[in-house]
Image 1 (cartoon, one colour):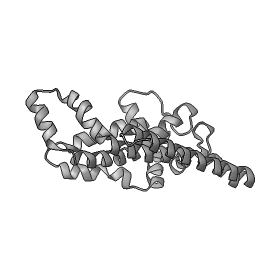
Image 2: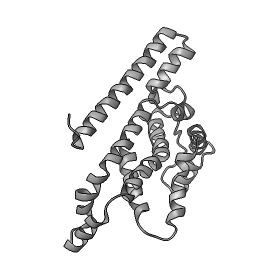
Image 3: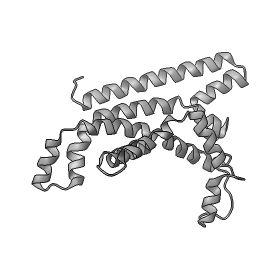
Length: 214
């Protein structure tokens, strides 16, 4: 989630700049987010395959590794593989929300900063970041909720591997595979309560940060 927020802001800042072909690049940016999660996870599963995956082929061609790696089977690598795929999938969503906020920023603030000779980095942290905080907060909330209930991308990549098992996969395992309806239902209910609690806390903290009162 942190990587997605940082990369999303960087991508949004790049796409907000004026350059030739900006419209085409913006449309291409949305492709990872537009592809269904199961489809994108399956594509990455093929690419990360230790026998015929293109990722291992490229890394070996560059001399970065000596032998193919089992990205989705090795417990020490599977979590990194899941994070990489999830960041690739969700970063465009964060970038889209931040880009929409950047498009609505008043230009007079930047013109005044340019006249005063303020460094662009300082302008970003003192002007841009505070103004896009509401949109960034919304993106973080949605991504936090998705991260808590994530199922499809992990199940397609690593199935029931213990190293990447989430609460959703655990509840499904108890319900479907172990046929423990009571325990599985309790796990699902607990997951719902955790998501609801996180949502309330995020909204409360966000409202206080934005000066909306208690």
